Image (cartoon, helix red, strand yellow):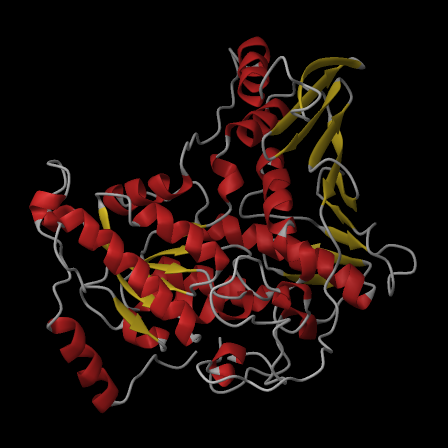
Length: 450
């Protein structure tokens, strides 16, 4: 990856612009505990639907201040800037114009006054921007799936460790009680020997082939494509302006990894947490029959013989010799010795209880004396901020996110190449049966090389 550079003229323009702006709000408009010197400053890169949710949280906090937003779409970045300025103006009781909107992420990263970079771009940009950010001394919160391919995951972990930065991957299910308790049931042997895990999410990626449309003014399409191929524009990949949906670039092989990396990065991540495979991974991948057209059935096999299968099911299902646990967001079901013990799955059916109640009862009854207690985070972003201050590794550190996304990529090899292969989870390469060419792009475009 080449150094992140700007022309001298562009850098000086950028520096002059933010040097003159009132970035730090007066201390009187914040809580008494948060002095301006203690407030962490944030630069947000990629202002789509996911960042829209993040931004709403950040601007309501007293311990952080958003000072930069960045997007290749003019409407999105200006709308985000306006949202920040209006929120802080209301908080201050006076006009605030301290948030600057950028097209080029390098200008955000170059700012010395920014502590944290939050990345919510499409997947194919994650690694390059994240590496540039940690090299510049920033702590990073990056959305999942962490990288577009295996090679990028390996390189990103190296760079984060070299820079000694705090890095949280946005696999927020780790900060939800139902998932932690499900994993503790597996780790403590409550379900007996778990040799079967079923994960439920959508279809593999397909090649991009949408008809080309004219690019409207206000979108830097070449920059959007970035390290990926320069394809013809379509709103299928990048709807213009402020929108409230998750765009379909994630379904394409060129820019995402289908639902295998999109939702798989959540559910496979939880599976590996339960198996104690953080930083590790499967040792084998098995392709489904008729892999060219199959949408389910790929399998990952772990060293102890546990088989993880992509199915249409309940989220994450752990099947053991003594019982089984099914878990999804806001949903939990425990079956022991063939009998339903605790369940909250459908709010219209399970009206007399709640997810919180069923999970809490499970914890009291089966995990009161548990020998294995997993990292207990109640808020994914708060956990990140706490670690920025303590310099500890957060609940979904870069190495955790890397091992989870690599497992997703390995599963994708089954659908895209029909791979039945042995995998080395330590070296992050095939032991036999696969090709090293699958681990990275054929070509990185435009100098955006990882």
